[in-house]
Image (cartoon, rainbow, N blue to C red; front, top):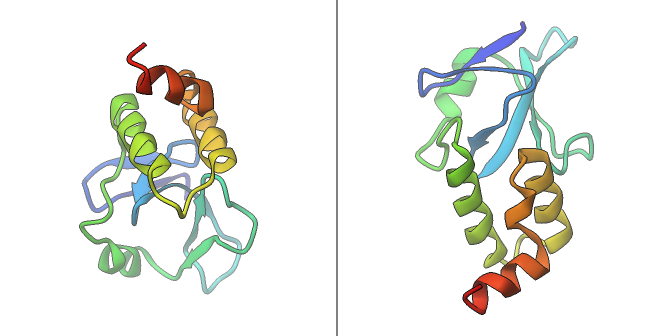
Amino acid sequence: MDTLDLPTGETVTTEDVFHYEGYPYRFRPSDDPETAFVLVPLYWGGSGMDVRVPSREAFGAEWSDRSRGVLSDDEWRAWLADAREDDRYGDEELDAVARELGVAADSGLLARLRRALGG
């Protein structure tokens, strides 16, 4: 499985990041016969936070209105800005996510201070 069809109608590769249940994820194929693929959170991947999905049908059934699919850079920037106001996320995590998403210029403490001061 080289691609995954999202319930939004978009198709992603293992390199693409998508918004699933309020967080950025990638997918990767699975060698486990009981798992069709694995959803890997962008920052926490490999730390026990990966989501094993038994089938594409199960994935579609789990998809909710908290999932948005592939986002533009501006949409990821908005997500990051909102996440920085959320106590569940730390600056280190969000800075790493911003770098991985390629929108790091708009992240970090100094960037937030510049925005807060109107600069």
